[in-house]
Image (cartoon, rainbow over all chains, first blue to last red; front, side):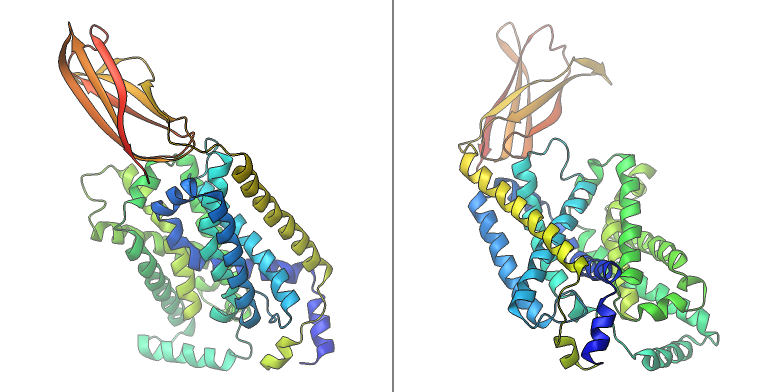
Length: 299
Length: 134
């Protein structure tokens, strides 16, 4: 592609910028969510010395600028230090916003939290987000001209699953990938004490907010972040391939996997009320649905 | 598309400049808040206060005494031990203990003590016994 073509493409303006930001946020969420379910980090952020907070911000900025030179979250690489630094500022800001939103949804930042504590917790939770955002292009980049491979993959999937209809095989492949992705994240978080702690502090209204957040994040990662094969995905046939239906179906699979992981570790069982089952599963459902989205990108 | 073409990044668009400006303001704001809390923020050991926080209720054979424990100091406290003692006529008839896992500066946690005898007829003391430095 020539430079003039490039300039023409980049004049997409706000739309392109929005896509870049969603890509950065999605990469950040994939990386940052396990640390958000770690209570030691919530506490750490609230007693750490402010100077240490400043140092952490500075170090993460420097690392992110370095990563921007090779990866970054935009569809073009920042070859100049100036661009890398400007992108670095945006990434740190983006990760602060993402971390704050999830912390509010998890009720770790509420109206009662002091400003100092909220800032400290947000900064420390934002660091893995910023690293994930800085690696987002490299990790899950949009592979152009990948259509041939994809068709091969579909044929392969059809053969392996013994199904002739590509729409059905594609649906099964995506459902399986969502389940495996959800399993990887669920199993690492399900046995921890954070799930009952978070679920205990969340009202039904905030549980609904978590459901909405899980759906939005999973939709953004698969259909808006312009990672692998997004255009192809939006036109795939089969029930699972329509963006809205796929997002909801993948969320249901993620919830089932989250519930299974909690049952496996005997965190929930016949002795508990159905409210407990629902609350715990929805709380674990956020990382599970993010894992499920990453899994679907990997097929 | 080769990676060389990707390296050739054109000047930033208006949208990118706007994002950069908003991001810079946000990061500067956070840095400003941290510097402010460093410069003006109180610092000192935890000051822990425990007290009953509501009416005593008889439920399921127990008198429930809700309490709250607040950290009025600046530093956080770990494993805060709240102790309740119920005395009748100078004689201790019941004791309760509750540990609050973590209490940052300005934070309040709530709980309840349960007694078999009516604490309003005796002398109830709720106090903080110890804490650990995180």
